[in-house]
Length: 85
Image (tube, rainbow, N blue to C red):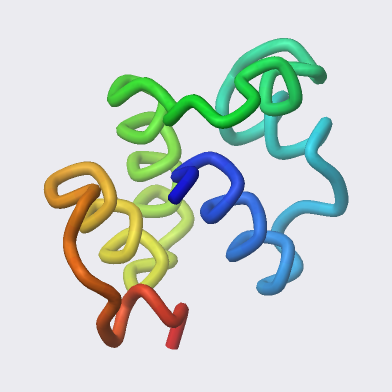
């Protein structure tokens, strides 16, 4: 599993981002090509925490719970939050 791609797809499905470039810039606080350069590597914890804080600030608590789960238990088996519901 790739946390960065999974989070990107979740935010894309929710209409919060339009592209990987936007996700990298707006949610990761990095260069527009950041997500592409990461390849198969996981996002660092500080980036996942940044995404979590932004979602909480925007009062998107269910999505924030999903991100918190990824930060705290990245290898947890799929469940309710994993499906994005």
